[in-house]
Length: 186
Image (cartoon, rainbow, N blue to C red; front, top):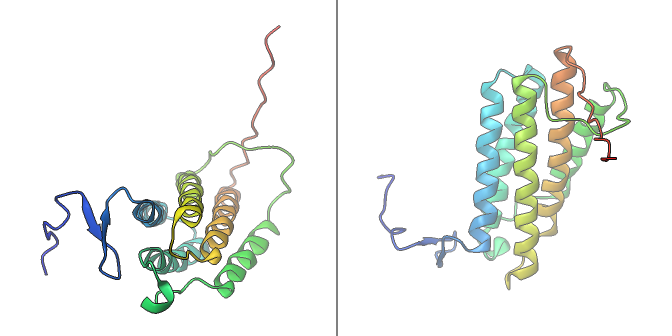
């Protein structure tokens, strides 16, 4: 199978069900941003994350392919790509609770700093928040249904990536870097 098809040379691409849409369609933007998030998670893993964090990120990467498939299908139920569910969201919440239990409570905003792995997770968190915004836009503007579980999944995932970045820093002995509010000019 060739990697190039030349079918997208005119600025259109095919959805899972076969319909062709412009490459800047909100649906393409949504699942393209999820794909970008997945690539940034791969980059975070390449930084040598602790094994328990790497395992969590690996599971998330597989789940993000399911999210992308669901978003690439105008009718996920008919296409059998409705794969995001409450169980996966509950697992993310469990991971958040587990990691937070080992961290000092936050008392102020922190900067996205620390080890290379933690910073890569912070970058992924930012991309995750953008993916969430793209899916919210898609849900609001699409005539086809977009499952609310996808928005919930991405929302919780952004929280988990923040907590995992802090956890990776803590395991490396790296303290949180608090944001220092600038003083207003006199």
